[in-house]
Length: 318
Ligand SMILES: [Zn+2]
Image 1 (cartoon, rainbow, N blue to C red):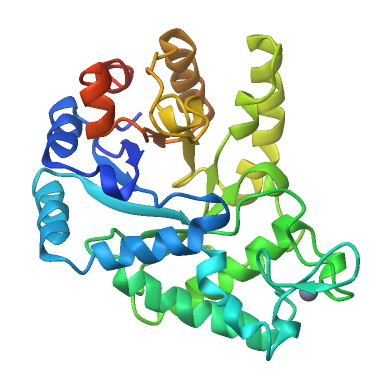
Image 2 (image 1 turned 90 degrees about the vertical axis):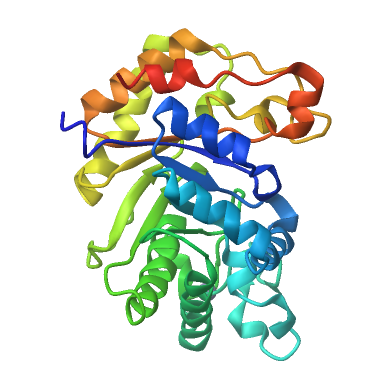
């Protein structure tokens, strides 16, 4: 294991960023700060709010400070609802997805078989990439968040949700690279996109980001069974995308998940032993980049419960 190459990170909501969080990460030896606008139905608005924040001198000063402390900045967001402008639906319903009832609907994602829609999506992705102040070269423009939200038109029906994500993100990355030549884009393996695409892997700038969300909903599964199932899911993904730059997006510190995404935040209790085992397993499998959500641990959390301790996480990499 090349320790210098090793990247570990924590992801917080935009409004939670503070000098205190930055110092906490840097002092603990964490080297990547992820910023994640809130997802769900409101994801396009929360991404817009982030973009407004990024135009303010106060926020830019914080980002600069984080970089000066050695943190790489990554913006990770469910971006499809923002990248495919829903207001185009009235004039261009054909840009949007067809649901299982055969209706075009402007609710989630879009029709990746429509060349104009794909091109608009890609151009807006490039413009978004250029607005992400202080961002590193890895981009995380995830499709919308949910299950069975892909296009089922006659052309898209032969494409799996994974294929549709691949097509959209590959087009976005090609457009971003016209401005940022060494940009890379995460393929998020998550819920509907957990199986690798069936298309040939033609865009080497796409790397695997694996988010084991369903591990946290598979109640009653014992740890050995889970690890076996996880390895079974990961093998075809790693074969497809390769291990270079493969990344895990975990939930060990995701107090928004443990608070069911409702404020006030619940008191956070780290499940330390399974986390240490997971980190060991992921490193053994060949992931050299690991990050965890750490949302709902901001100032309001601290006022209620005191400062969260992230040293068990950073310590697990030593
Ligand atoms: Zn379609």
